[in-house]
Image (cartoon, rainbow, N blue to C red; front, side, top):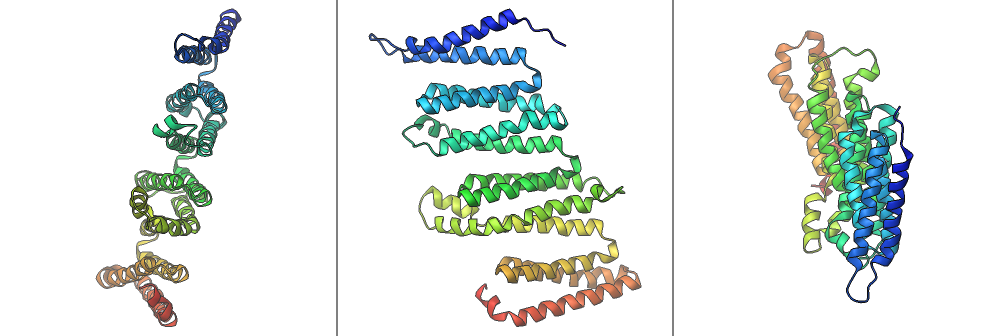
Length: 378
């Protein structure tokens, strides 16, 4: 256990306090503008406190201490409307955020969560705090895009924590849960920045599943927890759960698309989040069926999936979803004619023909039954 020498620690603490206290008088002068001098005193005090934290705290706690120091400096800067104090807080935030990736992520279990999760909460709080301030109070902060960067710091910190705290096979599912929260936040707060985070997290999920879960090849699972079908299926199901938030977001973005300038350009690029958060999990389920279901039953699984997609499309009234269901059914028909009829066992061939035939009849019935509804979405 490291022994602490309190005399230099106390001396450095007193010097830092004196820097902070004397900055008020150092910034006053009737001859010239002495405010930079006062700011230099506060910067020196903050630097000294940061060094004390670095040398005296456990390595795992340094990032958290720096961010908490930044939190105090940030709040004081907002109360005093001081650019210097807020800039010091941003330096502390960036330092703590960077240190997480060099030190904290090497920890495991509760130590990792306890030393990392509070950072994300502080970053999100600072994002919210800047959002309720007027432009006249934080002009430099707005030019530096501090608010946007802090929101990304929060999300990246949260995703990184899940990456190293969860079982490697369940990381994608954990990230998918974050996507649902992000889209729910984007819908509730009407802040498109969280939709952007959701898009980026969704891309990370797809890469994670393709290059980790699917790249492991076939493996025997000791239980449901180790089953790839459960792991990837959970991630896909959570992404589907983002759709109730994606549809109202699309409606709002479509209204923004009628405006001019940058808002219109941004809305055009991102105004259909329901497409991304429908087709991404659908692709995962389709590939998962091809890998996990026995070769003789893949067409059956795809046929049932196509029927579910078609019924869901009728429910939400989305043309692209409906065409996807029909396209998947046609793919099943083509697969039967070109491959299955020649390669399948007799029993598998009978089951495939029966189920796919029933699926086609059901889709035909639904098309006839809801023809008027379908025409409205053509």
